[in-house]
Image 1 (cartoon, rainbow, N blue to C red):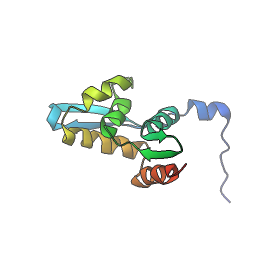
Image 2 (tube, one colour; image 1 turned 180 degrees about the vertical axis):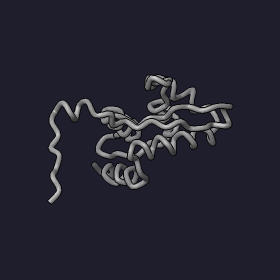
Image 3 (spheres, rainbow, N blue to C red; image 1 turned 90 degrees about the vertical axis):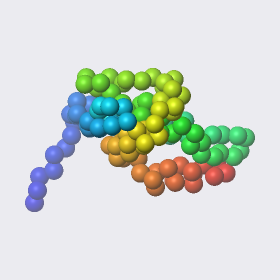
Length: 126
């Protein structure tokens, strides 16, 4: 029988669990580091794409790629390159470039198409 490793609080808090990947972006003539979202960032991102009006809730996919890129593009030390406010500026950049980075950020953060659909489904008449 295999021995199970029981994690401590400190072991969990010290774990390096935010993968980072270098993504080539030919449209920008270079590469950019993309890292996974933290739990807080993912919650904020998901909240930013849900629009509440009275009792009804709907998905707001406006500028979704740029929002995620702004949250996940980092420098070599893992510090964000963009602020949340920069998402509007990023949204004016190449859709192909944003899509390339968005796909990696989505994969690293465990954001799947099913997650977006679940958000939309959970918001219906919430």
